[in-house]
Figure 1 (tube, helix red, strand yellow):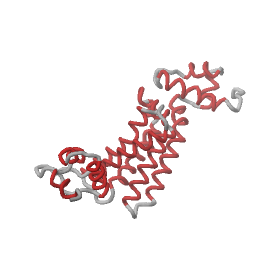
Figure 2 (cartoon, rainbow, N blue to C red; figure 1 turned 180 degrees about the vertical axis):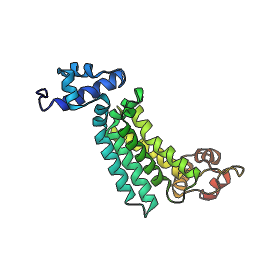
Figure 3 (spheres, rainbow, N blue to C red; figure 1 turned 90 degrees about the horizontal axis):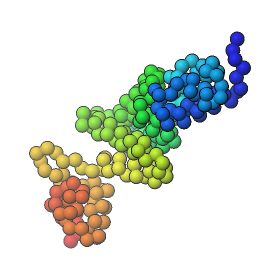
Length: 233
């Protein structure tokens, strides 16, 4: 015979657990303490969630659903690798922003990994995202750069979760796009001698603002000769 539990108890349990996990950590919070916070018995909590890991799984489910949907949408654009890459980067960032306080909870004690199913779905999603960002026929350097780009999406959201979401989103995307737009020096060959369209625009903007060619070269990570070649006159 089960205990008579009000229909909103499950939602109240999840709300209380979220607050307590964020404040004290997953491992330092017991089921009994969650029950006391909600004002029900421990049995009532266990009626809805057989174990504490099941509470984490329920809290994480909306984020995982959004994550998988964002990756699926980007995957559908795979015939165009650049569109697919941009879609998965922006899609992941929007998921992290939407669930930023849950994501920040994990910073305290890796509580989101307490559920094996949550860990498996999260890991699998990140592996799929990495493949999309790296693009077809990627090498180790491309795979690493894709992983760096994905890491650049979540870390700032966790660290600056209380900042305005639209400003944070714009700043994060700017950093990620710089990673892909910036030419990379090749070992033993000095700085790159070519610039992307975005860098050419920035080069001329810095020149108009009075920056010297040497300073522009340092800012853009290209050779000084490359800067001279792209400057008017």
